[in-house]
Length: 131
Length: 66
Image (cartoon, rainbow over all chains, first blue to last red; front, side, top):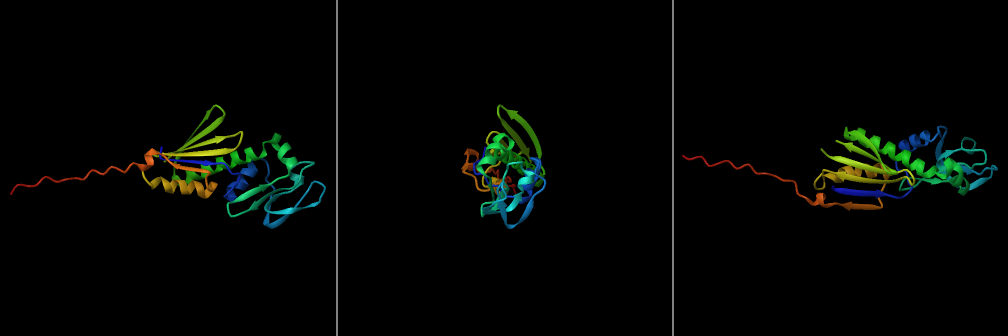
């Protein structure tokens, strides 16, 4: 082995791959813009803004808007405590990160003109890109 | 053949990346490609293979007798 990298922060660097990951989770209708307002489940405007927004009517009956705010590090999720607890059985962020990583790997494979091999070892998924 | 091994933990979404089979700083280019898509890693460690120098065998021509 020559290098080891571990990514722990919940941040999404690439907009296109993030939108693809959101679509994988069923969120195909998104708003994009600059500092878009976010609304709560009662229609109340929240103090935060975001550059990518999934409106609450596309999230769930009692949900709030889901936002992804652009920062220098990438897009960071803005999600209410309620939605964090209930969306996708409380696994919204792990599922979004997993879907995003899958798109990252496919992008790396394409750019390196490589091949992939996928295995499941215990609870983790290993994907090898050879080039 | 070089290889990148991605490990995803679906329970947390955490991603780990091992770049294998590349000696020296050549693997930095691959790491930069991953970082451009994922961001700065919390852990970035060069493993033993990184420090191996590529082997170069000089070709020495035998002297010709005149």
